[in-house]
Picture 1 (cartoon, rainbow, N blue to C red):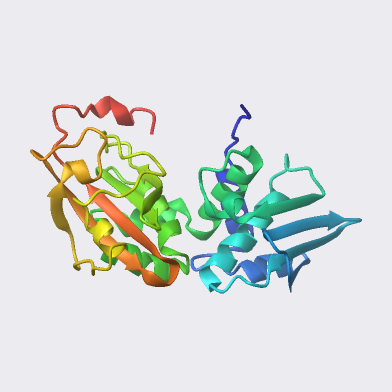
Picture 2: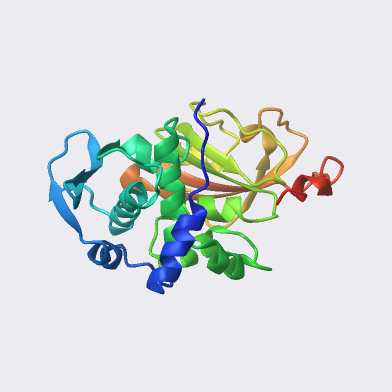
Length: 266
């Protein structure tokens, strides 16, 4: 298995060099490095980075409709250019490479992590979530501040909080992916699993509306070893245009399992 290197320092160095603060203008960065951005028909691909005889070009799929998605895609391609061990003269990136943080291609994972640190710098994010209750309202607020998607900011929050939370994206009635903080010790249902009727996300895909705000549900609705005897807090946000639901889970009854040594390597 390929080793994943840490691209964070290179993103932070770039921000420092150009004296940039959120929201990050990826077009300004491209101008600074003379990287041409072009929209074109790419069929199944999200974007292509080309380095040819010193000329640099990012070609975007013209069907990318959301500015936040376009910004992340450009930041991803900038990563291929900036990271010194990314030596290919052409990177052809599909939607799985860019939209999923679980890609199996090491260089695509690195470019995604570079983009995440570039657009949502850790030092600013930590200040924004310090002593804050993590909920959908905060995710929406910070997505607007950083000009990124709800999923992008949600993932970064989960990666950088001590709170026992998890983020789950469901599509077409099934779990597409999930990510949990280090203090969330329970196992979430596997990717590809059909949602269970004990969850409010299930209701959306069966024609019903999701109530606003956090709701207590049986843990069997979300956890591998869940039951009807314990609860988990679910806050789900329906995204009907994408036929998706973004769910924030909070599970707080883990004191007997939690070990402070979990954070010794942070």
